[in-house]
Image (cartoon, rainbow over all chains, first blue to last red):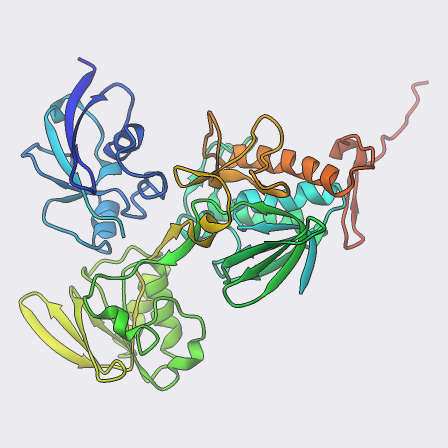
Length: 109
Length: 350
């Protein structure tokens, strides 16, 4: 299996189901950009270094996600609209175990 | 009025390298940037991060890349208008342009090259409901003049380098400095964190962690902030509240210059010279778009080089010119400096 299904709710509340490849070393922020679910320049500003929080998302499904790194944790500590289920999309890499993942993009700030 | 040949909007790596390529063609450049220092994202967001895809640099820190570019363009004496955002553009009858910043600084140039990256960096404002009412009445998102804090009670919020650095700096000026952060840990540079620890031990900085400001109180100006620390909510008197939560780029006023915009980027002619739909205005680096566009520093360098050749032809349509290799022609600075390859030593074999 090389693709998994991910449900992404964009910033307008529109739901998208996308096929995300597991063999491209892609992260969730890059998936959102690939499928153009957020305007260019409003997501992944730092390129994926956990340094800007523009890819913050809320994880709505019960999947077990990779543990939060120190960088991600501290970046989220400075982000806005943070909830208990907030993560940085750029730190979540697409793997088979994430099939069926459901997330919502946090508002742009 | 500042006069130059090529006015470059954005002093990131692409804008800086354009100065070098223009200099080889004896064209002078001036750069405008909303940030107070050159380097764009490389300086503002990730100066300590390594970059691995700059040709001939197996690894270079973003901050060092900027430092090297500044050194490389030094002979061409670029001018800088820093800490100001390019606001309006006016095309004159002779085809040249006047670009004015939000502070009213005017620049006159034959060519405008927009190298604005993702846009000008604007502060990220915390989501406190009545914060807008206190802007410039005690709430500032950027420290422009530290003197206004002299003998004042200042509260800073944030966990990155700017929150730490300004807390340290203001201890010598302000009456009191408090630093509020949602965590006990800080993201900033280790030596800054250690310095803040030291100042805390000396009771020069009051640390309020893990906590956040959730409300602002005042009649005509800020008088108190409401702080939430765990379950505890309390008010603290202050004259200034400075939330430093980093900066986010916004395309801003450039979007209204009549340029063709697609997906938050400026459309250019990539088959020729990266010119926009307005002749004389070019867009290079991350700010432009064309089929197959890649937002890479190395692509920005290439685009800057071609842009300068086209700008030269536009300024001097009658001049004939052939590109010279720096190895052959050397680099002749406007400052009188000259770098060139040393002459070979001739030695005969007996």
